Image 1 (cartoon, rainbow, N blue to C red):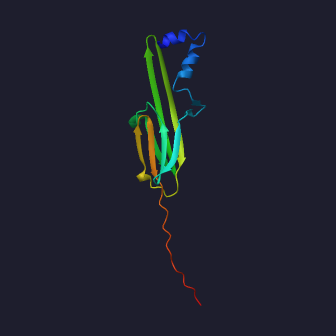
Image 2: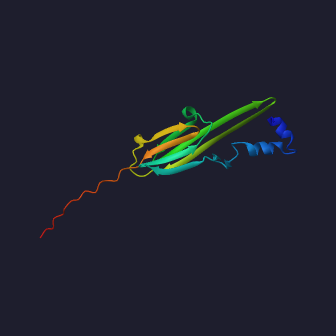
Image 3: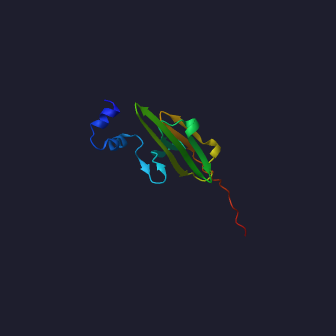
Length: 138
């Protein structure tokens, strides 16, 4: 069944049903779309995974670290033309994460596979406690 046929069977609110079925329906007022994210600790790394399907990571994703805050910013722009009908969806995604003090920002790595952006932030190594004997003066 084509999109046009589905719209005709939906009565007086066909665009409402198209909007509900759209993969880009979750909006936040003033901040763009929601970006589903999970973060956890794995093998000494703080791992941040963001669901960003349909994004070109080379052009549409920017990851920055400023003042101990890691920021993921992504842009999506999609246009579809079907017969005499066209649609476009666009949005901006921004999430920020506070990093632990002493994080080595040069060691942060990011990858993108099958719509999932993964950022691995090595956790800072705890300073080794040195034992030092303090002499007591008389």
